[in-house]
Length: 462
Image (tube, rainbow, N blue to C red; front, side, top):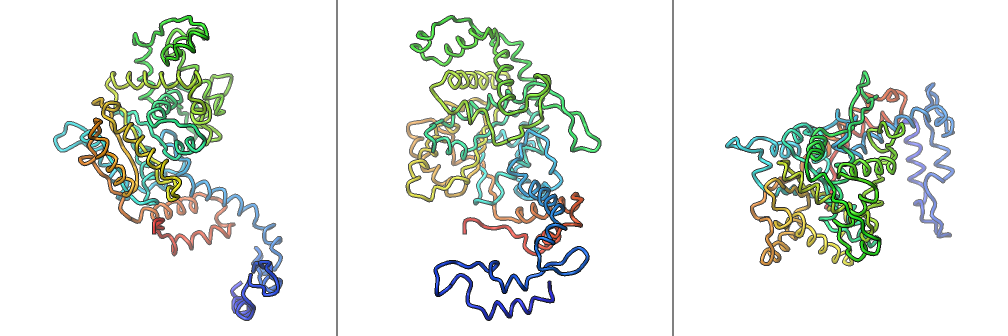
């Protein structure tokens, strides 16, 4: 195509500007112009040039499609990165970025050798601009340190503010406390049972399990606890409606289902989730390691859809009971707040929702009356301006409420760095090394050039 560059440029320079047709308001794209099309040619596999794009696609289509699939999965893998699951793209994790190191330091032992640094402060903030790598550094940190977190008895549960905000936009006003309690039960039920599966991504394939050792151990303790027994009730529907108490509704619901123990109910919930999210296999004897559609969540799309339902009330009651049991048994809960940057509050009409969001965070998890157990800790990620706004609310509410001190909270600052560039390069390197289609794909060659010349982080707030 290089042989035709001068000729193409000459014709472009001597034509009227595309789209500015003085006799018509119809916009004309350059790629629809017959003179341009006549002079655009591509190279076939045998080295000859053709102006028939379909000849080119017929030769390259399969390779391009397959390579595109590989690169698409790799480049966007962080959006589906579940730190609790195996991930085939760990080869391009950036381990030495300052963002990751700052988080790694939280799991180091403190100077006097008594605790993890994470436990020295009740509240930790991860502050940085939108696009500075907060969420992905979190995911990499949690994924890499899965074993270390579990060995230190840290049960982490994350509130995705974007998902909560979308519920609000649909009129489903779930509180931050309800979200955390619901998510805690949801995660627990997905990870307490042991189901083996074959990981075909490894060479050779390895047998693995869907469970979390930490969550399984908590479950085993619950089976042996007197709290596991459910008092039997036999209320009529009218009595249940009149009393409208979450504990009574839960006990009556379980009695009608002949569940004698809380663990019986947890097993039933796990099966409901597995069937809903299509991980249920072999008549219930096995599970897929992850859901085919990871956007589908039984918690978000069912439980949180109706706060007046018996399902919601029983779910939140059980979540609270489980939270208290975890803490009383000496385990730690780390509440993670993320996703605020994904919400656009620039519109003045969104100011009310923005204020409600900050008020909700003050109420939970920053309210010491609700999150005051020695084994509860908080990690919140947000922009500098959101942090400053939150502190203003803190000053207002601290007069009448017992709020965790934001002035003395630990701060991890995600300053501008080359993490975006490093991650992109490692992802591209990974794909170019692993893909068997790379030598046949024109896209692969372009990508290699882009990686070398244009892999610069974009400051989305400029």
